[in-house]
Image (cartoon, rainbow, N blue to C red; front, top):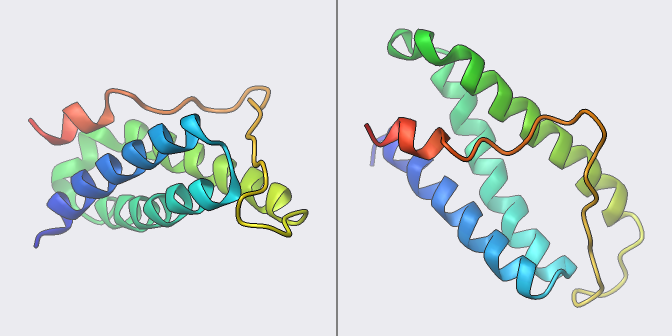
Length: 109
């Protein structure tokens, strides 16, 4: 499977995990998002090595920065977890880069 397809599928996986998390915002569901986001993060960094994505650097950087902010908050929240079903709620960060909703469409073109 190509890295391009892996990236698309893992973004979809992260979005599906997020929908489950919204239904039950607990550590268990947040971990599903974490694993998908980790894959997305690694694959986005691989895109930085590909000349065909030079026109999309700002979009790629913004997605990477969004995920880095997300990982930082995840680490902070995770410190207090003692149970998989424990509530795990992310809070909007001031001046954080928003989730790039149109990024997936850009990849599928």
